[in-house]
Image (cartoon, rainbow, N blue to C red; front, side, top):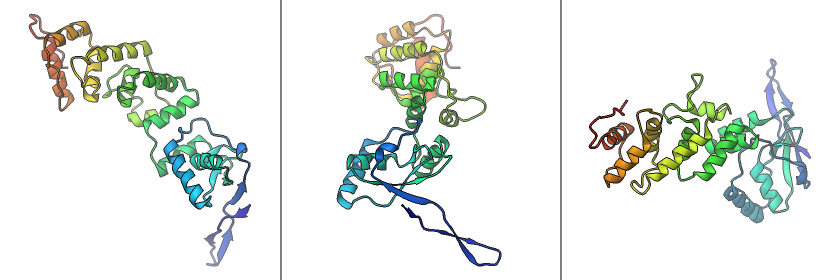
Length: 264
């Protein structure tokens, strides 16, 4: 092992003092390191780039960060690359660090996506995120954000809006709650029934408006599907949700004596 560079600290006498910051260790025993529950899934492409770099240049002194339990706080890609190349690794022990520091470090380096948070919390066993991961795997023809809306049983305009927090904050902090997953799957299946009539059945704007319609007690999906099938090409891409609402309203009420208001 060896000490990292020391950092100067000014005293009141203006004399420079040196303070040891951290100690860098080096080891070939990579089995002692473990992943921390909730960390995002490693990117295989990034690991490959690091493997290629190690094979070409060797291992550079860029330590991974671990806590006292040898859980990797930062540097899981470097560790995987060292394992693959049978190389030694440099590491620094930071006692007390946990998943909060993992999130902070990753946000400062490269923002986590919603998928990263989902896989992280699912890996920790938080059931709402476990259910979402399963739902997304089975319905990945829909955008990920729309899968969240479906599993929330709410349109994306209102989903996740809890306790006055914005949607991303709720999802990131692990407090997002899935609701009726059977209903979510039913809605996804119904949207998919529109695919023969509209290739944009999975466009986010359309999905968001359709989820609002499906929550409306005055809206009957079978009736809507029938009207769509009777009007080839009637469903088309729209520039915004308001246009989708108007279009769906007009299709639904086509040749109907008793008009149903669906635009509110």
